[in-house]
Image 1 (cartoon, helix red, strand yellow):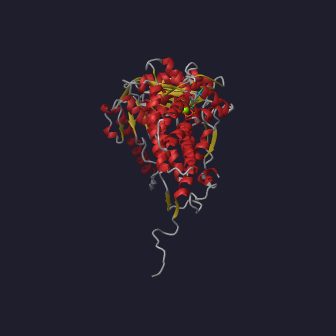
Image 2 (cartoon, rainbow, N blue to C red):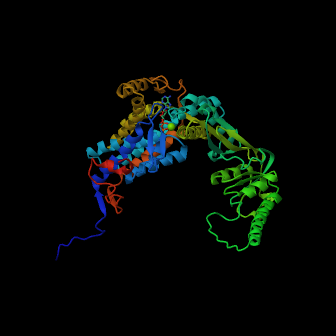
Image 3 (spheres, rainbow, N blue to C red):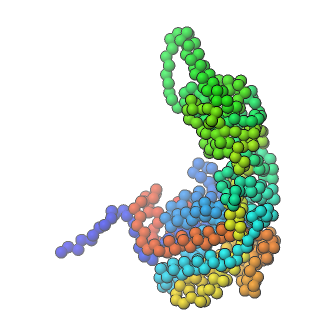
Length: 542
Ligand code: ADP
Ligand code: MG
C-alpha cells in the first residue's frame, strides 16, 4: 500500500486550523476596534479617508470609517457588519458596539491562554449578555415622549464631537422638530426626512423646511418662480427627441428636405409639450434631460420645470405630493399628478433650489444644511443622522440611560456581582464581559486627554458607593453626575450595542477552521496564519 496523501481541495486553498485560526481572527477584530477607538466620544479625533479617486471624507463616524476602509480580512469584515447593523437598526452607537466586540475578543484571548475552551467562553458571554440586558432595562429611565427639552439633550449628546458643537442648539432643535413632525403614534419613518445641503452661509443657518427641497432650480428665466396650487407631474423619460446615447445618421440632400426634417422635429416636441399641458400639470420634475425648445414651450405655457432630478428625489416628491412617476407621456393624466400648496424657485448661497411646500402628505420635511465646504456639510449630515436616530429611538421606546460611560460602569459593576453567584468556568467569562464594558468610559477619558486609570478608579469608587449616575462629563472634563449634566442616551442604542457586540464576538470565537479559496489582489491570501502580520488585512491602508 502506498502512503499517498489524500487531497480534498486544490493546492492554492489556504487553511488555518484551531488556535491559529482563532488567534488570527481575534487579532484582526481587535485591530478594527483599535482603529475606531480614537474617534469615540465628544473629544474623539477625526479620520481623513482618501478614496482611490482622491475623494476625501473627514469623519468621526464609526460606521462611515469602516465602510470606506475596504477591509478584506474575513473576521474584520464581520466587525464591519455589526457596525452596519447597529447603524441600520438604531442609527447610532456604532463605535461603541465595535469597541465592545473588540474588547470581548481581547479578553476571550486571555481566557483561551488559561486553557478555557471557546465554547465555555461563548456560553459565559451569552449568560452575561442576557444579564446585562436585564440590568440595563432596570437602570433605564422613562421620559415623556413629548418633552422637547429631554429630546434636545439626547440629540445634543448624539451630535457632540461631530463638528456640530458651535451650532448644536440650533441643530438639535431642528432634529427634534423634524422627528416630531413626522412621528405618528410612536412610529417614526426617517425616510420622510430629506437632507439637502446648500453651500454658503454658516452651519448655524441650517434650517428645517416643511416640504421637500431639491437642489435644482427652474430651467429658464421665463418660467414662473412661484406656482400656487401646484399640480405636479413626475416624468422619468427625457423630454427631448432622442436620447443622446443613440447615434443616428440622417442624410439630407436638399434644403427643402432639411426644412421638413426640422419642422418634423419641432412638431414632435410640440406634441410632447401638448401632452404635458393637457394633463393640466403646472409643475414638472423630469428625471432626465429637457430640450431647450421644450423648455421654451413649457415656459410659454407657464409651466415650472426642473430637469435631471435625482431618482431618490423623484421618489421623495412622489411620496410627499401623491404624484405617480410616469414613463410614458401618453399615461400622463390629471390622475397621475401630485399636489402641493406652492412650488418656489429659491436662491440659497450661490445656487438655486426648488421648495415644494404644503404637500399633500404633511409628514414630508427637509433639513437644509448650510456650511462652508462639502466636507463640513457631509460631517454635519452624519451628525444629524445620529441625532435623528437617537431621538426617534427615544420616541419609540420612551427610555433613556445616563451617558458618558456611566451606564457601562454600573452594568459592569452589577454584572461582576452577578458573576460571583455563578459556579463553573463560565464565571470567568462573565467577569471578562463586565471588564469589557469599562472600555467605553476608559476610552472616553483617554480621548479627552485624562488619565484613564485614575478616572476608572474614581468611577468604580463612586459606583461602589451607590452613585450609579457617575460618569464622565466631558463638557467640563471631570467625573460627575451625568444625568444632572444632561448627558443622556437612548436605551435602545445601548441595548443594541450589547446584542451586536456579543453576537459577533461569539461568532468569531466559534470559528476554528478557516478555509480560503480566493487569493487577494496581490496574489497572496488575505490572511497569513502568522501572528504579527495581521495588519495585512487593511489592504487599503498599506
Ligand atoms: P458611537 O458611534 O458609539 O455613538 P460617539 O463618538 O458618538 O460613538 O460617542 C458616543 C459616546 O460619547 C457615548 O458613550 C456618549 O455617552 C458619550 N458622550 C457624548 N457626549 C458626552 C459628553 N458631553 N460627556 C461625556 N460623554 C459624552
Ligand atoms: Mg454616536
